[in-house]
Length: 410
Image (cartoon, rainbow, N blue to C red):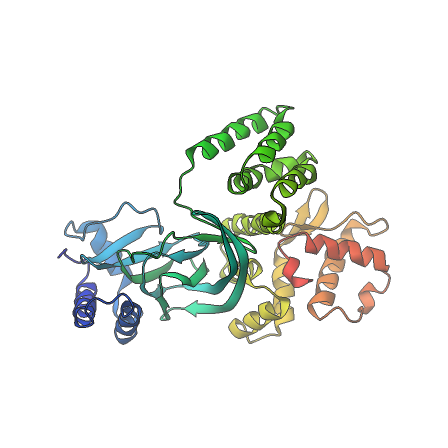
């Protein structure tokens, strides 16, 4: 057995090993054992994180470390032939929606995260590495320091984590591998699952070559992409579309290319367009998150990415910040995130539309007033908006609907 970076984790590992041995190393029993041990001996109450980091940096006698790229970084704290204990640091980490080929439990040692659980219904296997279906959020919760959550391998535990603090640190007690539970799919809502480990080298190189044509502004780029998706199978065509979507939209060639793909694959491609659009929205929020360090605003971005309805978002805001009404909290955050973008007012990636007769100096107030209108249910216009026509109100709403703030006005 390997040494441990800290006596606490050595003790924790020995307790898990003994209890699991008594259960005959049953994989079904392991999540419950890991959860119970972490709740009985919570690392958040027993681990001095700065001291642990110092000891790891200065002492050579540590468990064998992995080559994993998961975590920022991952530290192995205890190693056993059948399981191990890892510490995962997260600075900018936002996990994809995913399932696992291992089981166990994780504990929030430091920081906090938004944790969402999903189901995948009506699943159809297109290939062994690509599925379509309906991804539905079942639960979303705030995990603060001290919380412990079980991990079940396979499709019983499809989840994502949006880490709020820098760093957030989780302790994971996990099996090495649970046979028969792979592939470890990632999920792109609302309709696609894929195996991120599967390496299709030809598709990768084709995407890279298309990137070259994009960068040199080759005029044959759109036609080549259309020829490809007209010939490729559904799975490879999807990844080509995902890679090329942004450029094709800039060239006003996207709708025609998507139509060719949908005509080729019929009902099997019905959810592709919505999935690609949602993937763009989520990627925009991830990029925005990288430029924002303030914890409240990171929390807001986490909700924008993960919460399916305005009502759910406001409920979670009220849970974490009960000192003021949730609508006022959201409007305060929106005001802090506002600025000038390409000669118009914007909130994150929502840009005030070109509405004749509205001076630039009035745009920030009107934008927030329209947002308040929809946050409060959209039933009655406030006095500050009575001068707007229905068409103008619709244009401003459309600006929100086409942005990362869309959940606030649906």
